[in-house]
View 1 (cartoon, helix red, strand yellow):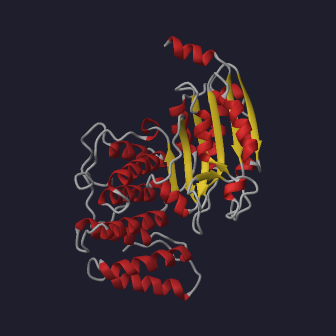
View 2 (cartoon, rainbow, N blue to C red):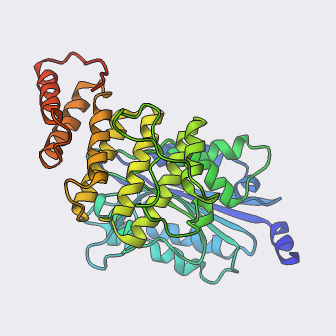
View 3 (cartoon, rainbow, N blue to C red):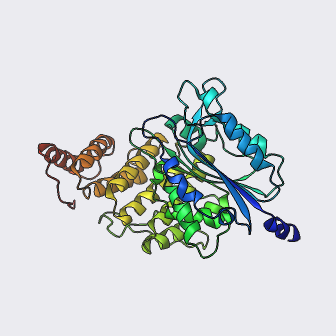
Length: 399
């Protein structure tokens, strides 16, 4: 306890790094960095006294390394914030933080190697170093992080998020914006775990394209393995008549209870964050193609429908059905049929014609494998035909 007290009395230090490489739809972190830099350094670090240095759009990895070495030499608490794009060099297959001049061909020369960060911080006293990140990456890098083929771990406590960037997903610096808002508005600076938890709840991010980083207790620590076959998905209030509402969770530590309570209270982002954390835990334990992962995808679909986002709910249920089929569950399995039926139900509440056509095409393909009740396939074809007749949006309808 005395050691902890002495540590918090020492001056702290914050190093803020944000870079936007010359790429399409770059994560706009440099523009939002001033919001974080405007927070008093002592509040940033969580110490009575602190100083801060910001590197906005650095273009030389050696410049970043020099600033990092200065920060690492500080004896008191250290916060390193890094934002931008993660890339991997093709020769050594190592993670780098893209800098202002980084292109696909110049990663080895113009990007900052992530392992330099770990190397410079490894001699610091345990418990004195926190790293917070707001990052984006291409699908191959993002999947490598999820599968733990690549890692951002090091001799520090890590918090933050990595967002998927592809043609359908354009990342935003919502995590940084929420972090700055909380630090400026909170009466007292929250501890690191609670700060990350509040930031994750406040950041409006697409859960399906977001990898949350942090100690288990900072997200949600699975106290035991979850058997997806023994736990029902929380039922949406507008459940189709043919779907049966589940019994309430019995165990006090069951995440489904926390999810249901948060969703019913309107805290949908919090509910989605809990479900996403469990999905990632299931992914690490069972693999991407598993019924356990499919279960948590479907839980997020329920939350999306409760939130009033039927398009997202439909897409998630479609994805859950595909994962179940790929994992070996047959077309007539009750859980596969339920996922497709729920996707079908949500699809009828999607009023945007373009999005409805996209989802309807996917649903139509699935309906050839999982036809469902009599008339389901024909229903999809009828609505798709109406959607292709003209641009007029269709009002939500029931089945």
